[in-house]
Length: 368
Image 1: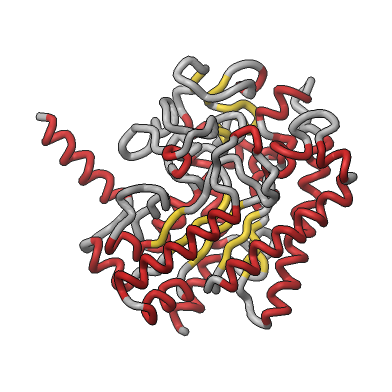
Image 2: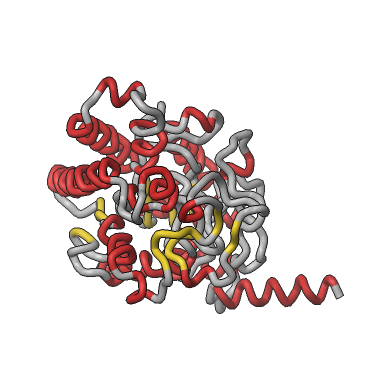
């Protein structure tokens, strides 16, 4: 009976991800996918680390195909999973997963780690996380491992033709600048000086990705940081967003897009694509009912005001229908919100995607 249940679950899982042919045959033609960044895109690397920044206990994963926690900070699929569906591929494995060997390397890899930021001093309270210098070092190591499987020329081609997603920035405010009153960074910089500083540091990271062979890179901005349930619980009396964090978002996102434009101009081709996730999230917040949500302020899983205090745990309040909530936990979108975000990444106008959306990129690259 247990074997029958396991087989059925496996069949359902692969049907969901739409794989009509065998794994190795699919990967011969499929585009590799690499993911860098923080908890919004981490799919389990922190499970292998001694850190408190983990999502490896219920009810995380309650709506994932296996109905078990995976390390994703979601009730189900996260943004990289859904992009993988659009690429016609299975989800990328965490780079630290022992399963990431042989032919599975050709799918790509997820290097993201919850708690990290653009700056190395971001998320210091989480201690053992994979900060960006180490994520990039792992990317170099990954390429060496792929060369051993398919040879140098094919490994270079795989990386050059891959899609890359990078999500950074939110923790540099929430878990650094505003982590405590009078933080080191807030004493060192005013907000209007801090933003260009972290944007300039982000630029260095993007250039290193380019130097390591990345040629199509989706770069997301921060969401409306002052409107997440965790910040509402601390700062809001009547449901209004936290003004200072909103100001940080309004400064950071336009400067990030400007920096991306400058990088593309310098390289003289479109390598980096800006995804304005701030506007995407603001759409949910300004009119949640238009997207089928009953709330874009209250987290599905949590406790206290707006379910925004502490962590999502087995003892937390848990909504019965996760699709009705824009936020899964005090900081992270629900699977449904993630699907809407990826839909906008795929087909959104230049209001959201600059200079073009992902569907346009995939169409252009298919003709190259």
